[in-house]
Structures are given as structure tokens and as C-alpha cells.
Image 1 (spheres, rainbow, N blue to C red):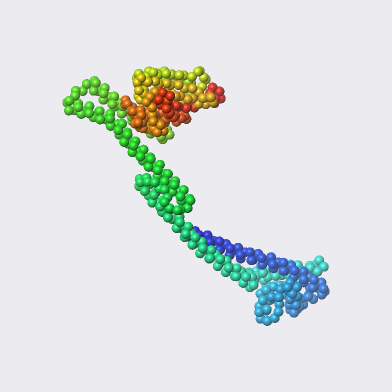
Image 2 (spheres, rainbow, N blue to C red):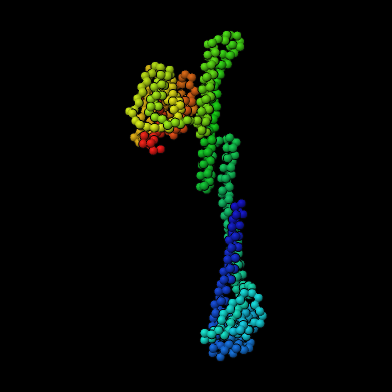
Length: 464
């Protein structure tokens, strides 16, 4: 393909040069002949004025030949003068053989008797400012012999230069194609492996063009991202199956014990089975919520509300949650401030519930939990902080703490019946509200969660 493109390009240049050369030579010849005819008409006018009129100048063929040769002698063009067969042929095809002189009425006085069959040029012959006749030059349908010979020489030179350029261009194209085809072949093999699910690094091991090296680096980055996604998918499948296996195992064991007659169905058994089922439902609901959030369509019903009053109401209700038993819970609301916000209060309560439940589940007893919030100086954002006491989370685990089903195995050990999706849901809801959330060590050796949510000042709410 590259060779064909190069060949076509060079051939187009050659053809364009040839056509341009022919057009240029034709234009040059036309301009040259027009100027020569102007000078000839002036010369004839001078001769007619000196000899007493135009008929006296061109009364016979001999006078016409003498007139033309005199003009050519003054022009300094010896080519059409002289004697012999060659000179005669030149005169017939040159200026002398194509010039005609007409009187004021358009009757031919001298020159070629044949009527012109192509383009012609004409100029008035003036004597003392009065037109006494016309000089008519037959341009013909093509170039004259000398001009055609010159053009053939130029054609030959352009053709030779063009074909030499074509040979050089094709040799360079072969070299470039070979240099590009090797890395492209290697990348093609890598992409085939990626399509087959083999997400191996694709870094180039060859000295190719810079563009190919950059493309190879991009493909390698893509392979690395796909590999991480595949590992995450497998991890998700394993962790989800693990989360569901426990309640399913309990259900299976209880039901089999009833089927075997080892246990009688009673109210306590039904309550136990119901609790396990509700636990599985919570896991499935949380997974569905995260899946919907990843699709960018988390269901939220935004309403205009007072964010400070909303947080104080939700916190007052949640601090009595059983998961916080045995902990000292401190709530520090800010001073009164007139604010408005567009929030989904149900989702905001879900965020606070998950944060406080997470602290209650992982904080050692006796311990502390503190909830505080306030408004930033620009009055466009509200911050909320939930922090607890030891144990904490290793620094290496903090960037992953909001990942679904992540376990900080080296510090805060998992307890209770949580699904491991609470903090991932917190992040999804906060992002859906246009906010941010991050985790850091707390002053008490535990974990601190800080949220930033957008709000509107009273003036903004009044103008919007």
C-alpha cells in the first residue's frame, strides 16, 4: 500500500510537471509571437512610409521575401535567413511562412495564400498614425518545430528525473515500510493476545519509530488496566460468593437438620432463618446499588433543604444505634448558619448510618466516636467528619478502603455481619451529590472519614 501510494504520488508529480511545462511553453510562445508581430507591424509601417505606401513594399513575392528577411536581420535571427533546402523548410514553418499582409479592406497583398486553420494574431500597420493594413500571423494548432524540439528535450529531462525520483522514493518506502511493519506486527500479536484474554505487558523490545514506541507504551498501559480489571472482577466474584456462602451455609444447615428430624421447626428457628435471609437481601441490595452507581444512574430524589438542621436531626437519631453501644459518642454541631442544599435526605442518612456503623463495628471498647461538621469559608461547601479511636488502618490500605469488599486485614479486623460494601456505598452516594470523601488516621489512633458536600448560601438560594 505504501509503495503504491508513493508510486502514484511521484507519477502525479511527473504528469503535473509535464502538463505545466507544455502550458508554460505555449504561453511563452504566444507572448513571444505577439511581441514579434508587433515589431513586424511597426517595421512594415516604417517601410511603407518610406516607399510611398503599403503596395509598393509588398508588390511581389520578391519584395515580400526581402521585407521579411530585412525584419529578421534587424531582429538578429539568422535561423530563417539564408539559402538551401534546410533554410527553405525553416522559412516555411517559421515566421516567414506564417505571416500575411492584408490591405485596409482585408484583401491579401502578400504572404501565404493558404487560409489559416488555427489560432491567429493580427496587428494594424500604421503609417503616420493611419491604418493602412493588417499583419496577420498564423499560430497554427501546435508548436513550431524548434519549440517542439525544445519541449521534447524538456519532457525527456523531466521524465528521467521523475523516474529516478520514483526509484529512490520506492527504495526509501521499502525501508520505511520494513521499519514500521516489524513493530506493527509485534503490536498486532499483542492485541490478539489481549482479545484472547491474555493481559500481558506489551512494552516494545525493538528500536522502532517514536510513534510506534509511544503506541506500544499505550497498548502496554491498556493491557495493565485490563489485567487489573480482570483481577478485580475475579476478586469480586470470589468475595461476593464468600459473602453469600456464609448465610447460605447457615440456611442449608438449619433446613437439613429439620429435614433429618434432628431439629423441630419452632419460632426461634424461623427467626434465625429470617435473619440470614435478611442479611443476604442486604448484600444483594448493596451490590445492586453499587452496580447502578457505576452506571451513573444512582437513584436519588434531590430536595431543597437546610443541610445543618438535616444533619443534626439524622445524627441525633443514629447515635442511639445498637452498634455504638459501649462507645462514647460526641456530636459537635456548628453555630447556626443560614444555608440551603439540594440533597437526598434518605441517601445522606444512609451515608451517616454506614459511617457510624463502620466505627461501631471496628472500634475497640471502651472507645470514642466523634461526629462534627461545619461550613467552609466560601460558603459553597459543607464538611462532615466522623472519627473514632483505635485500632486504625495501615497507611498502605487507606487508598483502597472505599473499594467494594476490601478488607484491611492487617489492622481493623472485620466483625459482625457487615457486607463490606458500606464505605463503597458512602463514596457512591457522595459522588452522586457532587462531593468528595477521603480517609485518614484520626487523632485517637483510629480512622477519620471526611466528606465535602456542596451547599448554597442564603444569597445564592435567593437568586437561583
